[in-house]
Length: 304
Image 1 (cartoon, rainbow, N blue to C red):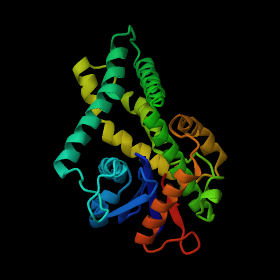
Image 2 (image 1 turned 135 degrees about the vertical axis):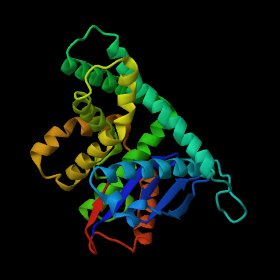
Image 3 (image 1 turned 135 degrees about the horizontal axis):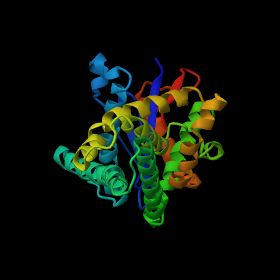
Image 4 (image 1 turned 180 degrees about the vertical axis):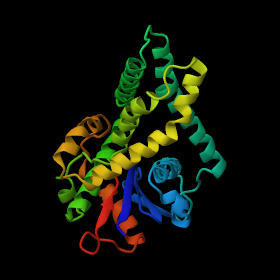
């Protein structure tokens, strides 16, 4: 079975994950690279039902968000050089703190990208359901693009976007069977079909078709439907992105997915060789933890 390798940019570093482990590499203020790894106990490994299509997408999304929050918190501590005498990171967020941060972030995202577009559209004089859901979808995408454009102006976020680019380059190099060295990896693309940015765009597109069956109910049912249907939409989007990653040679499919690939230009920036080095360190560590997987030893199915 092919091993899934994923990635995420964090503060001054990159997190890479496999089926059973994730690894974090962070550039500290003194220039050294700090590394940390943790095991993953996924319900998908224990229960077959969680590996079913669509359901696995919902589970994978929840796991990715949880690991991402934890990695982000640890990277912030490493970047601030908050370590003990043994060089280990001093503190990590407790499970309660992670749940609280997770709830705040999800709540903000739901309000901004789900509730707000639905309410704005409900105030417009639109009677036809088809027109309603399309206009709502356009408003949602516009808010998303505007949000990314604004936060990209922040210096710290621009560096995170550079590490996002470094993550993509490392995974593209691995997928191509190239040598994992900074100069070699730097030549690879910033774009990857399984990027989370493309995933989010397709969540918005698929939502148009799903919400077409809901119609135009009262505003409170309208908002409820946008929240309740999110797991189904996320699961469908996951399957689409997963399929795309396995069929990158299909020109028709890549043409259909082109908007999601273009959108990655907003969330990635050209990294430096030092940033690429950090990404490679995280990738090599997770490959080691997953059984020293290399492109020559085993086919690696990569999820950026």
